[in-house]
Image (cartoon, rainbow, N blue to C red):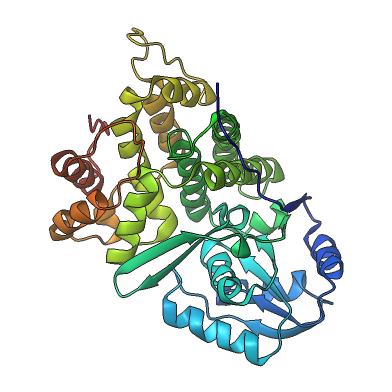
Length: 364
């Protein structure tokens, strides 16, 4: 066993009902006096409550999915004009992504208060869209200094969006099993993340206003992001970034649809990862098992059935005639060390199956 693992410097505060106090404490620790709060229109009232009492000089609500470059530029200009010395983002991945875009060029510290299971708050990865192309990068300047996790902020997140967001977190876990920099620590974090999400998400569906499911899911989402930040972006995320940029598809739902197809594509070529994933789903993964020949895929599909997960890219608005162009773009972005060789033919088959929602998800 030989590997190099880097842990990102970040404070994590996890307390149901503790968001307001923990956020105030982190702003005091930073010594910030001119705070910009970034929150989408849907989180406007929540942001006012959570950030009440902070030295806010700007409430910024222009948040757009996939962070278009022009939206990022406007936020950067506003932050500079107002003399902002710290950023607080309250919301999902798009909100965190906008704060990161501002921090990328300004170096301003971020305190993140997530309201979904996106996981962006725990990574040093940024992403922006220009035209029909999404560009991502890695820079420690965009890593939030602190994360304030509060499961009570998730209670009003609709079940359908909770499912999609939670499966997006699960995709971080799966990708972290075989991404370019994946190591045993990443795989351990990812396996525990899968276990927590497997427990939490069905509870969220069954009892949306209960804290237990939300806490498990939030804990799992954090672990998934930690693993992903270290392991890097695998095939699943490369595919979803292409689709999101090309067709402006909803981020979490796209991940939820594509995940089983990528898992079925790679799992037979990665025995150790397949066994870890299956065990996290509490399913046998022994080769040739009469009861379950491929526990990882079966475990995911069982969970998706419980959650009534999104089924096809067609349902999300992707045109069928876009598959060929998407396949070419994915081929150009295939990460190193993917367990299975990717060809134009097999990636086209995978995308077509995900577009149509083919039963069985066997893209082998």
